[in-house]
Image 1 (cartoon, rainbow, N blue to C red):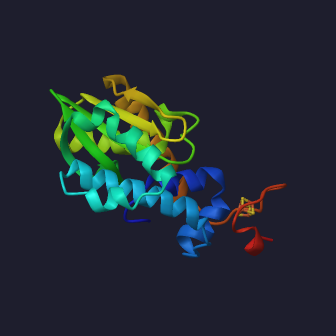
Image 2 (cartoon, rainbow, N blue to C red):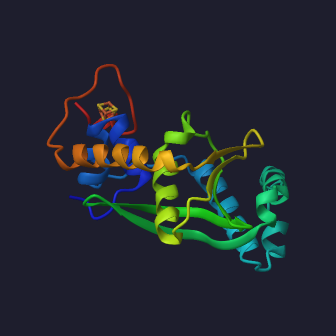
Image 3 (tube, rainbow, N blue to C red):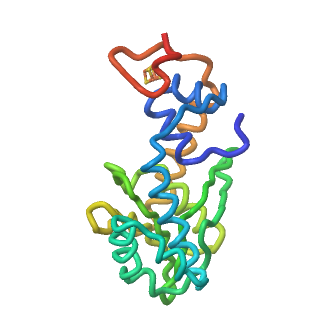
Length: 207
Ligand code: SF4
């Protein structure tokens, strides 16, 4: 059993249990596209320093024109005028006998409502309400702050739009059941056959 399951682990298992095996059981990491990774990392770092009210003048001056365009948009969003609770915030929640958790890009607050901010420099989830990130982070905030006034916000920096998912009381049980269900599947995983006509970064190892 894993100590803690992250949204990425659950997404990978859904995509392909065999890929999950390579990545999280055998701990084999494959190279990623460095340019996209670096771009996202820079924007995340800048947003974190800004929300923590640190001086970012030098960082801003060193941005490429593409980074500056994205950063200007992000900074102008209303959520960045709310109170910062924390950034790059590690939270976890225990559901049944499983721990789920991860690192929130930012948690901000306006009046009595918490907003979980997630910056996306790539694509946003196809089904955001039931994305593992939405479910896990929302339940983490609910448990830690003992509140249901939570909105998860996917900030789509490529298309310059935001998707809000407002948590309701009815979501709690549904989210928990979905998470327990996949965690139990992972716990009972032994092996999986190669999928037909598929391709991923592990295909060179997969036969
Ligand atoms: S190549 Fe196919 S079966 Fe193998 S790990 Fe990747 S997605 Fe899974």
